[in-house]
Length: 126
Image (cartoon, rainbow, N blue to C red; front, side, top):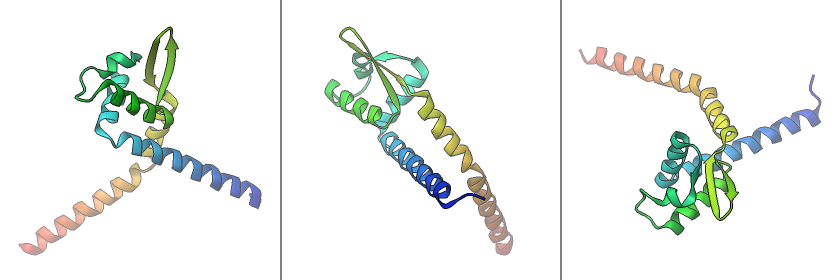
């Protein structure tokens, strides 16, 4: 049986993890930041200057987006001389994937219930 200290610690860890996931989803909610993550996932490590290419926003705006992604723990930054190289933070992506998979059963059940309801309504209309 868990003591109250262990239960409180577990609840705190869960709440901290939920807050972190929420920050990460909020950061990914911006289309430019989502596109940056997508590009980094496909291309690997990319210099900040090169990330500015292909977006219809200024280089300083891309830099601010990278700052948000870095603060959310979604990207890693490595300094090489004058260059700042960015890559996806694999542990954060793994946590997002695990969170998504942990909610899969709920969504599958919800979609199955919705399918059954639609079929029932279609049947009653006949």
